[in-house]
Image (cartoon, rainbow, N blue to C red; front, side, top):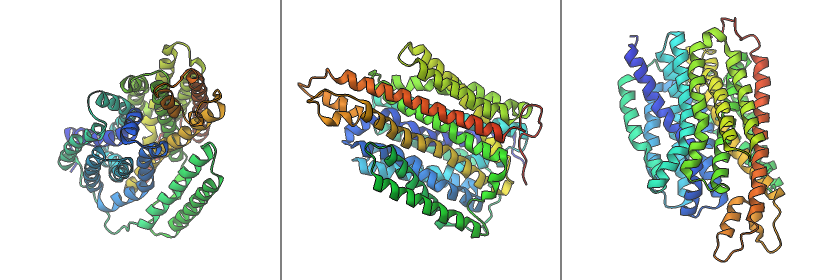
Length: 501
């Protein structure tokens, strides 16, 4: 039975609520982290893992969750994911120490991984008209950006009035509403109970990704631990090889690597990763810089980076509406190009009028909105319906890869640049040269002479600008690569997706 228009858009509202939770929790700690680490007495390493545990576990489990949804039904997976997410939110809110909070964040990621592929798969199954589906997927992409951008603001507002656990407790009522909506509006679909689910493949992908993240963090760390970095890189290579070999042998692989031969599909995957790398990197480092150096409150810093989301909204909606007319090339490649220009504007005008920073963030958002609005369509539209879960999970992994690498690589890199460039006078504790956070903590001690703090802040600002150039370089690479892949999918080409069957 074809769902009515009311049922279709109610379903979109329901999965949007679930997606909002997932993306919100990816960034809600960007502004809350300084307060949270202070309250729990977390070390800098624990602080990084409080953030990283969530995207790392989620990215490792997404492939398995998508194929499991094809087997059990995406409606069921969405409800299971919501239940786990709600329980984990309660555990995180009342975690008594940093280690238990990290564990709760990992459990949150399990729930997110279960429901995230289902959100896009349910849209694909519900919206049969191509133009309507393009718009629905554009709204879906918009929500992912809005949730990511709202995270720092929500964190700032809640910290201004409540204790840090409120940033997790707010998830619970949204979970309950989304569960009601899923029961009422989500299609049951046709689960393929005969399709096996391979736990080993899911674990191998998690092991490989974990090795890669640790290797990146150690290489960017100052000083790097060569032995640990080499060992982590070996774990990544071995895990990846074993995963790919296993996929070739399985009659129902968790990931069919042949789908990456489709140019629009590959362009969609890569563009999602590039876009989220830029958005996550900008949000994390900009909120941290303006809180630590410019003495912004968490709310003020969150409002500043929300400009990215403001820019995303119009381009994302119009991208979905006009995709069938203009094609993938100008929206994906053009969006990445505009994002490159926006980040360069922030970097080249940093330290002058704040208006230039806002303008650069706005331009970045306009570009990223256009890209993300149709990246999902390029992915979902190039696989047959019975592989909707697999395609959705690949798409989600690309998003999480981008965010995860931004946090792991850029977070470690800015610390390394700061340590390598800061010049402190004799007599200052060497710990002040390890991180800007420790420098401010030492300067705040009773009786401390904080005259050297300006040098520390200057070194951190210079490091921040260099990181902006790194983000711009990554976006430029994405512009070139997707431009080559989508050279036949521009205006005048009616085929925006392959409609694979």
